[in-house]
Length: 130
Image (tube, rainbow, N blue to C red):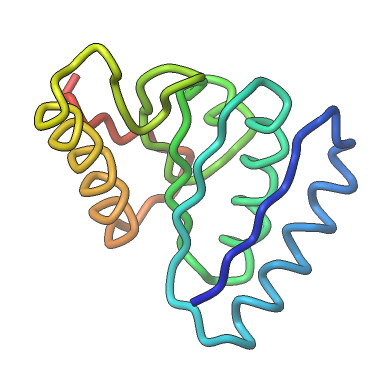
């Protein structure tokens, strides 16, 4: 398996595109079939959505999980999964441990389902069904 980590930190779009193309090349070389990305704070959402677009352009489907889903959609990320909150994208600390596990599992399950879906434009996948 492959693991990449970036930091938004105001990354210019041109750099995000370059990083996305480089990641796509490495992912293809490693025979990766799909990608799940998780974005937290503000600028990493724009950077991540741009990277997701570049990886998708290389033919690898990307599920992009974010609490700032409208930003990801307007940036053009093809498969956007609605996360919970910026500081707890795939969880909810207000829930019991068991309910939090179920909550996060539903987000990941939605991301996996999105990868199997054909999309023609930026599409929101909402684990809550809304």
